[in-house]
Length: 605
Ligand code: AGP
Image 1 (cartoon, rainbow, N blue to C red):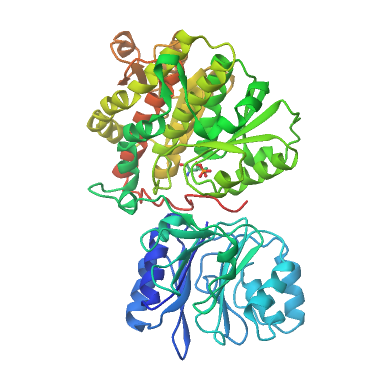
Image 2 (cartoon, rainbow, N blue to C red):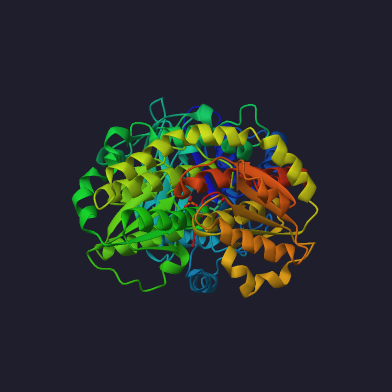
């Protein structure tokens, strides 16, 4: 998704805005632009492609000025081109704006404005805004923005400036995230779509809520600030740097053990075979009375939801459904007061997941959030929740956040189970195994060199199948998603039992399979699936429990994981698949942290 940045203060605005855009560049990156204001003028510079291209143009132009706005684009309306890059201006080139979101009624508004003689330069929906504001402009930019936004249907985070009102930025939000950072110096403000871009400059922020408009300028101490409680970013900038790693994805995979440690810290109560989840205490009595759970997410978060469904049904005896948010928002799920919903999101800003959350809240359903991003929309809008504490996840391909989500779902299972029929013994077993997880994952990460070699051996195949059963069916889906995202190879995940109902038709020696088959309750079934594949000369990499030697006789390669409780095997089995995807992309020379066509947090529908 697009990302915005803005600055007002005494420093060189272009430096701060470009740094802020680069810290958000995992959010979309097919073109970029800035407009910088000085005492006498405002100048706009745009470029196609990576942010570095814009940097080159700016070096030539040597822009001076201490206020301005900037944008990086993830194309939704209109192809990737210089004319479709933001910022956009009005016809007089007096008003400039940057926009993150989608305007659904843009065609009708464009026709109306064209009839009024406005001249458009781009194919985008966003450019509508600059002309609509121009249409309402009677001397006050803020008033014109307010009137223009009343006509807009859709989502927006926007920053607007005017030549006639120097050192003033109008910020507005509906659904797309937008924060205002209060600078260390009086009258200094840093604005951005993501806290990661503000944290290096200040920890004091205002999270704009939907339908809020702020007039940011040194003179007026932000009326809105007076009414709004400042939020303090819990964001360690050092952690959002790559350190010694060549890619954020590898760094974040290697942070798996620490992620689990952070997620369980102060939450396991071994002596009582239970967990303490402070964020759920307020709704603990309500959770005791629920008899149905809906688990909701997108992409990797949806795969975590599916694992959560298996855990909670088996150990907490609550019927569960796991569904992708983009489908659930148009389904008509039956919701009664004994149904609760768990929303899973790393960023806490995924538009489809937020849309379901807002719909369920309207219907009075109890909403629980499992979120990584502190202070994000999901964290602020759910009734209660648990942070995964995974730290900043920068790489578009989500890895450590998935481990954080699985760990919190396992703890939620114990929380709900111990409220119901889960015994002290079972609770103690799960809690004790959870406390061992960081050590077990560390042992698996030591096999990275082995997996790197395996990825090299299989990089020539254009298609790879992932199969798993029960708890590891969602892991097969996740393994396939990771490989697709970063290597651009065709990969599919399937329940092992589904192979013979169709997919087996594709299997031959050119289409290898990764079979996730730890020694669990469905191991024998997985072995029969492996035999079905072998019978058709399919190559197989097995992901098996250590000391299972027999498996070596029936597959081509084996990656061993350590033994643990069946319900916790996904925390171990996914790690080699994350490494396999990473090293395959590495061997194929892909841009691993910024895969093409993808964005870290999908803030529009
Ligand atoms: C995963 O690697 C992808 N980046 C994507 O599928 C992601 O999981 C999905 O967009 C959900 O994001 P969220 O957890 O921030 O809501």
